[in-house]
Length: 547
Image (cartoon, rainbow, N blue to C red):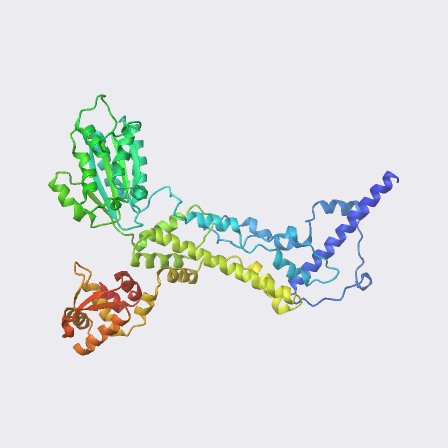
């Protein structure tokens, strides 16, 4: 074939292809712009047009093809208003778009047959859940993600750091006990203190201490902690006939042969796992810091707040009382601040402000555990993800059953446009909170009559101290005191005893004793005080009773 003829045929084919794409694009615009009216329109002939059609040459068609999108659908999704380029940049973060972008590469249409097929194929080709964005947001809330700074713990970190600095400056051993409820930032703070101490020692010209970090839950036996400490000093030496504790005591009782022996910073986490019947391991561990040539700085971390009250008095009698620092539970404002700092690195808004505030309030009222707040936030994101997938499945099933129905296909375009409100709302957070905190006990307490709920409040206050059980008569006095303080008429003693029996049958209270006098029977709270607080804290009256 003649080369010039081949070239003309190629140009003509490209021009025809461009005309087909233009017609497809017009069909899409007719479907979208019709406001959901997908009735096939009668095709207009060229003779029906009032104005003459200007035909372009093949060369112009070829040049226009290079700037034309791959199909007419991309134009619909990539349309941008010209005035948007003139607006100044917005400082506020945009809302999160977990639906992602439409995947138009898979979309192939034949507008010559049915234009309605566009909606049904569009629903199957749009990525309604962006997996990458979901992964990034969940990763920001994961417990293993270590933040760059430990917020709301500056005072505690400073006290621990100053204690370690003084030990290094004076080249003496020392012990410190850090306690607090779970999820209050103790372990993170110790990690931060370790980094700051090593940097401070290097910059100040001091000898950097050796660091030994231990998690006591990983020890096979409680006495293995002494073998771990000895292995840091003498990795190759094995105990022959003597225990690791005896070797450490001998090591710290003699002057070191080499001058300038490094201090050792020992961070023992989950220290309450070392508790034995005679408390011998804990006492021996803290006693290591009292030997004349001891070179260890012991930082013990535990969840038990009353652990210090139980073993510190004996340590004080042995002249090795440690310094005690308590990490209080996080407040509502602190939990909210930490959650907001987790999302600082993200370029978009993920949660409604009221949703985060609800999470912070509930967690602070229940336990103040920051780890629980992070888990609840992740659960709320999973609620949103499930909602998006469910809406996608419904759309796909409806379009597959009847692609020609206007009522079923019209929501497809609405779902594509509805991207700016797909963030975690307060209803998602409420469901996540109820799944985390609610239990059959909480539901039972919330369904009790008012006076039985007051009895539960009086029992929670009565057993808040050292007492584990009491008599029904003493509990009745606490109940009457609450009723008088709140100006509510109390029930009689017989009715009170009957209600205690009902609560015993429901497993909330436990009655014991063989006395015939009902007032002399022993009563014990059979549920956790936290469940009572969580069940009734939403009512101001009971919140006042529990204070």
